Image (cartoon, rainbow, N blue to C red; front, side, top):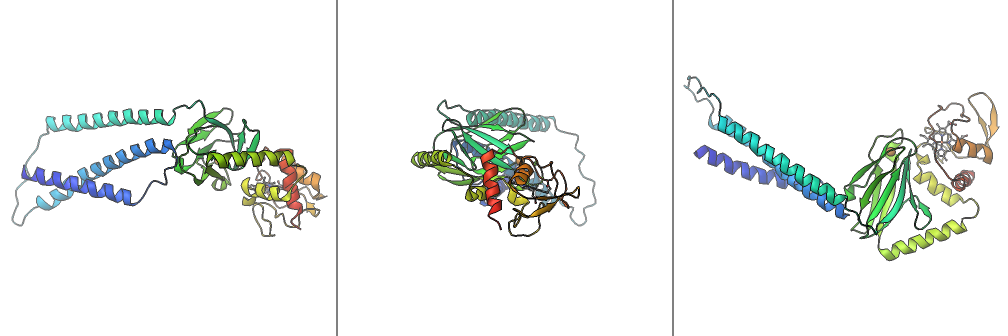
Length: 334
Ligand SMILES: [Cu+2]
């Protein structure tokens, strides 16, 4: 009995230490959404369970090794133990109850993260190889960054034109696959103003690691101002613009393969490309004019530049104005 009490005290102390240690590692990033609160509550319960189980196994093991070790001169055979029904019932029923309790709490937490607010702001999210695009149907604007007003639920309606991606902002905790051919949904209520990053959490090809876009949570006033600015931009968007093209180059992920300073990459550099003569893999030579560049972007498989592999350059579902902006940017790289 004395041993049981000592071991129990050690187990409790060890549980406390392991749990404190886990927290000191600071495993969870900033909590920036109401959905994160429920997820974190589950995480902490599981940390406690993990710390307790770890202690329950290691403490009696180490204690037995030390206290019940063979002493010098002790040559007897250990006591023969047949089994213990009570113990077996105990260690079946307690874990069973624990697991059922956890699944109940898990289902409840899931329900909380899915709670619908009919006033939610709608954003159509397109995840494609290898970038994100955000459309605000209520305002008629499209953006490469996800702007969200604080303390208002947003309903993200996710779509993919190519392969499976996954929308994940760690600070919001919740994560959702983006599946071609169907719409998936995710609800987030941001609670903390700040800048975050959405990343793709489903390996989706060569530039998967670069599939990141800014997520900016702002006050309602700043959000309205941003919407107004965006709407103005799209109405006055006359003619191609190299500045917008450069932004697209960065946010769409062209950057991952095309350099702008002449250095080698997965694809040809854009420095001095405009107006130059390009040799294709069938031996012919073309001038990289607007028409050629537009076609190369629209249909990457149509003409392959000599020395580069076909099928590497992904196709993008771009608007004509975006293609024109990109070409203006390429033209500016003399
Ligand atoms: Cu992806």
